[in-house]
Length: 312
Image 1: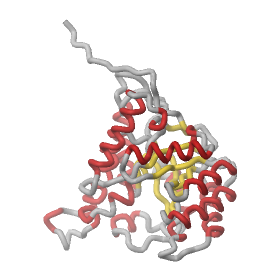
Image 2: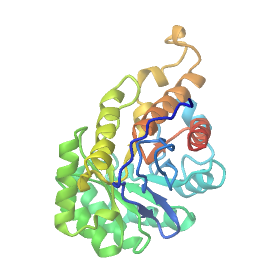
Image 3: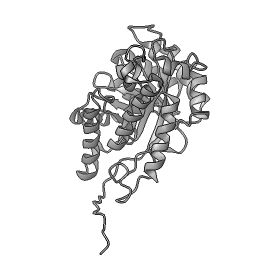
Image 4: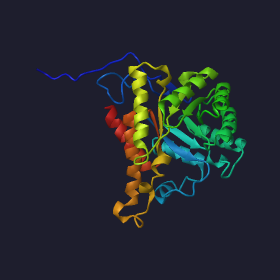
């Protein structure tokens, strides 16, 4: 007798969210990640490529050398990510606005965001410096400067969600809602944004990412629980697509960036850091990430192949 794979189906599904002004969508699945024998994933997970506005000076040479032609120019960086690396989304970080750093004004950052959004044909995520008060000010300016572009702005948190939510509502943008690794906190922020009037179909959840060896298991567990609650318990406040912010977390790890001269037993840093990013991204795709934000071109290329294989 032929063996039949047990199947568990559901009428629930993750909300399908349109990004940008074209036909790029995330979510819509009614299955756990890549369980294609049980249902459908109408939209494959997307890779967002990091772009910074402050010419990063402290990155590992493994990354800095790979980006040396564009690292000082966010528009050129975004275009190269789209045209050469196959980015599905650009993830622009306005780090220059950090009050503890350059503290550049919101209006200047908004011009950069608008220039990047105009230079590419793919959707754009715009994150501030992750200072709640300054990010609120910056996102108001960004939302106005890129009105109607349907940016994914953030990260909105419990301290600035009203400011960012109002800006998104007023100028036709979407929101990335970020909370410390906790399902209930994430649900509560979604409820607060919904009560503010934000369409739940324009919210992406950023549950906070831990890299391999640095909290990966916590992020994996929370993302997995989100998907189970959404699909098995039909919890409407967990039925948003998920974003995994892999790039900065993976390359923050000592094991990823330490030169081989300091840690010879760890092997060649040119391979090690890229593998750290690949493994972190792959694990979180399996946990349920609908978007992974990535940094190194070689890691991006490999993870695109991983997604191709899983979707086939």
